[in-house]
Image 1 (cartoon, rainbow, N blue to C red):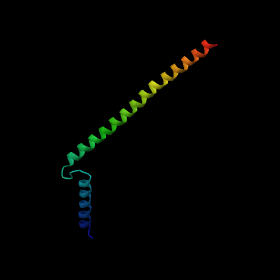
Image 2: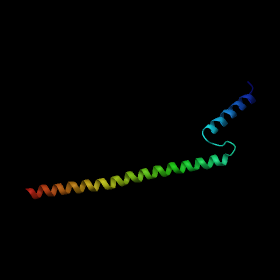
Image 3: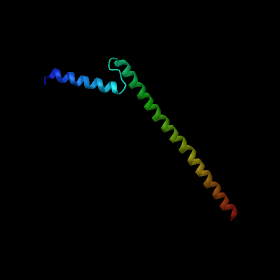
Image 4: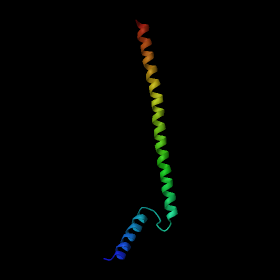
Length: 79
């Protein structure tokens, strides 16, 4: 095969792959916009996951400390 034939086969394979993934290879600006949206969506999801974990820690630690304190007070008052 000549280089031109190889390039034609590769370009066809790339276009077929992009179409099978739901992208329009004839409109690169739309593909870029989709990638930007996906990137923002991923970053937003990671941010919310971090905030939820921080909220759970901020809720759990004081609750456990309160339960420990109340248990301690109960033990002291029973003595």
